[in-house]
Structures are given as C-alpha cells and as structure tokens.
Length: 578
Image 1: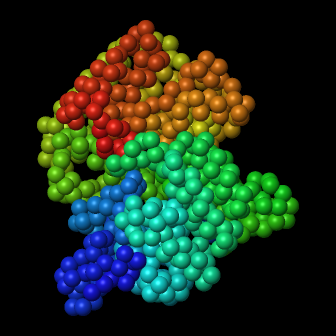
Image 2: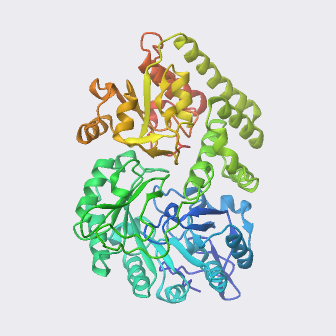
Image 3: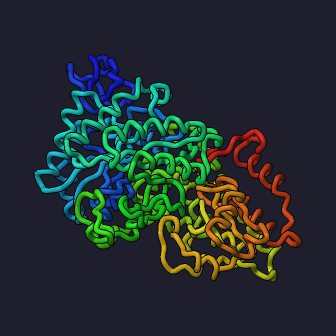
C-alpha cells in the first residue's frame, strides 16, 4: 500500500519500509517504526529553533526524533536524519503524557519538534499535539513541509507555529533532495498561514542559486509579505563541496534583494551580521536586535516588551515577549547537538573507527549516557581535549589508538610551547564571520592563542553567547589587536573581513597592517586537526622562533591519522571529514 503522509507517497510492502525508513506496513496500515521515541529532549529558547516572531525569548521543549523524508546534500542534521537507524539504539520512549509533564515541569510555553523532520514521525506529533493542547501548551515544528493534502488536514488544526524549510522554488532543487516537486511545500505554507498558524519560512542560500531563493521569496510574498523569511547561508557539511558556500557579504546582498518584496528577511549562519535585526517598517529604526547563536539559531538580545517601535508601529509578533531568553547549557539545544555528535565522530575517525556498526554503537552510548551534556566542558582547553580523546578511546575499545593521537598532539603542543617560550605576547583578537562577533573568553581558541604565544584580548569580554557575542566598535577599538584570526568554522575571507572593517570605520593595528588571517576548516575547533592550527598561529605570531613547515605538518597528520595524502582531500565545514 502507499504511504499518504508525505508527497513521495512510497509504496510500502507488508513488513517493508518506504524511502524514509521510518514507517512500515503492518496489517495493511502505515505505522511508525519508532513511535513516541526521541533522540533528544531539552528546553530551548524559541529563536534556537529558529522562530523569530512568535513568543520572542519564550522557552519551549525541543523534541527530536530520527529520520527525514528528504535526503539533502549538506544536511546539518545528517547524523539523526540520514543515518537514523545508526542511532536508533539511543532512542528513549517518552509517551505523550510524560513529554507534556516534562514541558510543564521545565516551565515551557510549549513543545517544538525540530532537528529531524516531523513528517518522519507524523503520528507521534499528532498525539503529542493533542495532549499538549489539553494541558494548555503550544505546539510547533520545523519541517520541510512536504505533507500530502490528507496529512496536512490532520496537521493544520493541531499546530500553532511552524518553520517551513524551503529548498528553493524549482522542481529540480526538490528532486536533488529526493522529492518530486516544489509545489507541496508551498501548498503547506499557504494552507497553514490561511488556517491561522504562525508561519515562518527558511530557505537555503547557496552560491550559484540566487535565482532559486529569489523565486522562493516571490512565492512567499504572494501569500503574505509579512511572513518572516529566514535566509540560511549554506554551510557545506557532509559530502558537499566548499565552493557552494557563499560569503556572508554575498548572502547579505541577497537579503537586500529579498527585502524589496518581503518586509522581514533575516540572515542566519552569519556571525555578527546586522541582518538578524528587525527594522520598523514605518520609520526604519532598529526595533529588535538579535545575534548569532550557533548554526541555524539566533538569540534576541533587545526587544521592547510590547514589540512596538517608539514611533508607535507594532511589529507582527505573536505572543508575549519574555524578559530574558532561556540559557541553554553547553552543546545542548537546537543544532548544536548535531555538532557535538560530529565532534565525537571527528575523534573516532582519527582512532580508526570506520564501520557504521561501530560508529552506531558508540554514538548510541554517548547519547544514552548523556555524554553530550558534559562535552562542552571537555573541549574548552587543550588538556580537556586530550582527556576527551582518551575517554572516547575507551568507549571505542581503541585505547592504544587514543594514546597514539593524544601523544602526537602532546608532542606538537610541547614543540610549540618550547618555540615561543619567553617571547613577547602580541594582542590577538579571535573573531567568527564578521569583525564585531567575538568568540567567548573561555573558548578553546583562546587556549590555542595562549599556547602559541599570544595574548587573547577576548579574555576581557565578561558576557558570553554561543559561540560568542556581538561587541561594539568601541570595544573593538579598545582591544586594538595586533593580530586577528577568523574562525575556521563559520568564516569569511580575510579580504571581506578587512573590507567590513573599513566600511564600519573600525581601526586596529591588525587591520592597518593587514594582519588578518582566516583559519582553514577544522584547524582551530571541532577536530583533532586543531593541532595544525596551533602551529599556524604560532608561526604567524612568532615567525622567527616558530618556523614550522605547515605543509609538512599537515601531510604528516593526514598520513598518520587519515591514511592519505593531504593534497588528495577536499575539505569542507564538516568536523569529521579529513
């Protein structure tokens, strides 16, 4: 029989599965294989989901299962969406009533399904939605919106808010994700909006696909120009080539185009951008200020309690504005959870874990033991990271390989420390994406700078975000860094960075002397390759003392831990890829 939940409408034989592998044909009925089972449940601020105009700063209980009805290249949720069965052993059974009790106990306004797609757990979502409404809670989801008309009729009466992720506007873009056409997703946007559901739309912007996002925005504007449109700058994860990643400046220019037809366009995955803020449609004044809060997320840092501009114009915001956002601990909340799993994967690759079965077993244990909750503390220092390597070696049954990796890293750290001992420590500013987004004072990168013989001025920033905070031009000027390093995760070319400094009137010794350096992906965070970044930083700060041959260092590392020549590898933003 055919499954009628998503528009792929798979033919599912008795006891078999469709392409998402999350449903089976049991006695002539399509049923979930993992009903009421979750890979992660935790409180989040709603902007982490992300949703911008609904109960701003509100706390919601994130509920994440496994599986997806699409197979998109570069998926940030690859671990739990595309490798769902590999982590199914870590699922926890939580009946709807228990999930509702958890949300009430945590002081949440509602429950938000995200990370995997709710089309892959439709029956569970409906049960939870009804139970949540009975308890006075709100219910929403982040979804690809690929519902059939039948399942959409079930969904519309029970969902309060939704972020519908568009892949573009053409059938070709949807076929690239394993779907049939674009039409069902736009039908979902229109149907839910007309049903009174709070709808926001997100859409990927990748290089070479400007026409796709323009066309998608035009179709959304025809439904309503007030629907918030969240531009997701494409980050090449998985097997996606780095050439598909636009710069932050390129994505900001696209936002300018889209704002000609849509009133509320926001740019994500772009630390420090001003395009997360909300301007008053009447007078143009900035009314709401937000900052980057991890992949696909934001944090509202300033908003009037009534969401009203001083000119009297009310923003189209639904619900009450909370006084302060929920403080999500460590790597918990939103898509940071998937990055934590990938950091674990990155170490396991270097320990020689290759089989899907071994990876699944270790992942399942890491999730089941709540290891992710403590992971953040383990990756904030060099010594902590070495402990992480050894702990994962024990979990993988590869203690010898772990000691080999830890010993290699320890040897290079000692070599760098010896080379820079007694040197004057120049002032170093560590940024991500754009000049006014500073990494947190306690981040791992600060440890790298200190070990490489620098003085990280970020240590003077008292407030913190994830992974950092916006700073003012005055703070930047007071730091007056002699060197600037731009994170290798969400990055920007040094030329764009310096141009942004000129445009914003930012001056510092590093800018005037051209001492701005963009780190290669994985060379400063999330991957054992940070040892290469340590050598690179030391050589930059102290070329006369730390004259490391970086090409030789990289080749040695790759041959030792990846078994390949570094020149043969195409690097992207995934932590686990060589």
